[in-house]
Image 1 (cartoon, helix red, strand yellow):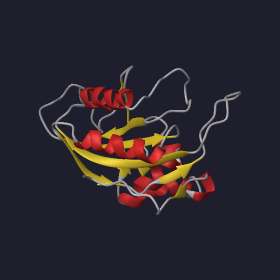
Image 2 (tube, rainbow, N blue to C red):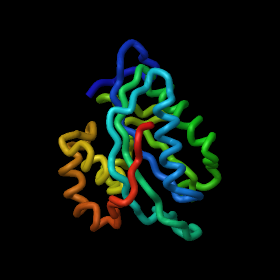
Image 3 (tube, rainbow, N blue to C red):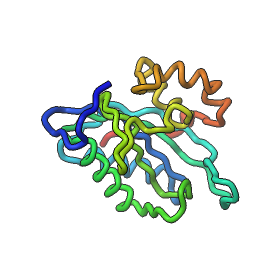
Image 4 (cartoon, helix red, strand yellow):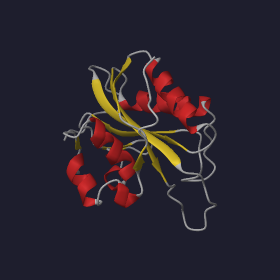
Length: 183
């Protein structure tokens, strides 16, 4: 693992992004996020996972929410991690994301799961994502698309998903009737 400055723009980076949303037209919002990522200068979508549907993670005493649709995408980009975060947040804002409640309902959420093998505890971007290894809604779609991948500092995603008991044990259901496309 390497400690790389979050503003390093001297090379291409590979990144894994987790997408999810449970407000409005969930599928339309996921597709709009993929389209916006694809329209980003200096960024190419390398792969897209299948879609999964999952129950929301609720904080104690939180209001009930609708289920999420989730997917994971791999990108190659010249954007350094801090600029990738700014782009992800701009896409979220453009698609109506608000941030009043932690783990609250949202139109779209774009989490940067990892960038190369960067390890960072920066206040605005922790890499790799600190809870990715415990989230079937990240691991299951990622595993379906790239079963050989490794989550930096945590291990092979196949082993991490198996340690959770698999997708279905965690309530993540693959939705083969839905598909994200590159246009």
